[in-house]
Amino acid sequence: MTLATEQPTPTIEQILTRIADIQPLLEQNAAQGETDRRVAEESIAALTEIGAFKIAQPRRYGGYGLPVRAMLDVSAAVAEADGGTAWVVALSNVCAWLAGLFSRQAQDDVWGANPDAKVSGVLSTTAETSKVDGGYRVTGRWYYNSGSWHADWASLGIPLTNEDGEVVDQGMALLPRTDLGFEDTWFVAGMRSSGSNCLIADDVFVPEHRVMSVPPAITGTYANGEPEEDLFRAALVPVLTLVLAGPQLGLGSKALKLVTEKASRKAISYTSYTTQADSVAFQLQLAEAAMRIDTARLHAYRAADDIDTAAAAHTYPDLTLRARTRADTGWAVENITRAIDILLSAHGAGSFADVNPLQRIWRDSAVAARHAIVLPAVNYEVYGKALLGREDQITPLI
Image 1 (cartoon, rainbow, N blue to C red):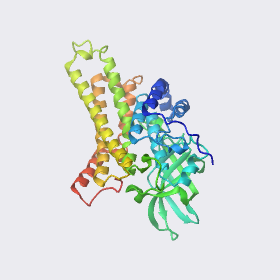
Image 2: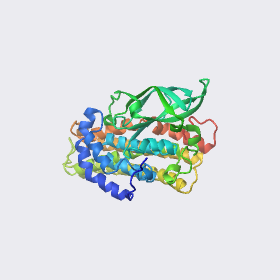
Image 3: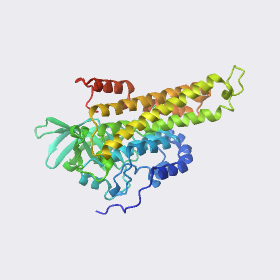
Image 4: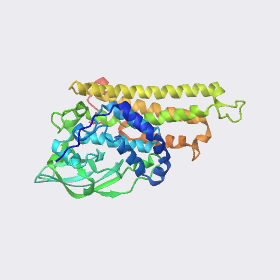
């Protein structure tokens, strides 16, 4: 096996400059992505060329292995052009990171022959397995697999059974896309271009080295042994949760920019204001939206710094800090969705015209905000119980 030729790892600033250069292309393809319910191949190719999918790939395969905060910045920058494309970038990067937690042999399977291989994933164990010599035979269906059109591999939740067929553990399995069937099921109001369809396994053999137990991973014991890079010691659930805030940050920033830019040219109907910018009411709304977007970014960055700092120190965050990451994510998402609502109200009914990108931003943000692992009320309960030291937690995913 030949590993990727080692190249200097670009800085996050260099990557963001590259993304800025292709934002017009991504924005131009956004409407087509909605129609096709998948990101345009031209956009995927451009993002691949600039390294946008290598943020959390191990460096030994040509990846960048950058901190969690970089994953937020990259998906936010892409979201300023298109939310669905940003979602695919965010999920592909975090699933590459997830693959980096598997055994070295599994990582070689994924990237050894193709350093540009992309990974999608679903944590839910919606499958049946049987233990066989050297691994498992797997049959199942996994909804909703974001970026499924573009993935070469998938990391999928499976129940782990013993020789008697009893479920004894929960696992993740890495399967090549060529072993999986596909069903086009993603018909939704927003994030349409994310292509979050169903992948299907029909009695597929998965070798033992491409299976990882989830419960030990939740507390920091991964299958990758002692990794060379700090990123692959980062806390499992906090990373999987927080990355979903990245596209939201970009959507909020773009909405603020659009509304601000048009304020000096757009009147407020049925009032004496010839421009929105002259209205104190509009000014107050704009300021509140901007502050909420800033608040979201600050909480997301705090959570990212908590994760990155612990990984660099070779420590694993305690349960309360991990729970706070879930709360930080929910708080960030809640403030972004509220900010976008305020901006659409301030901008007026024209926000919802088909030709206005604000309505797509609104729909993309609203759908993404309902992902189960970022739901604010659920995440606040998780954090509240952790603060109180209660034993009745509602989920092991902390």
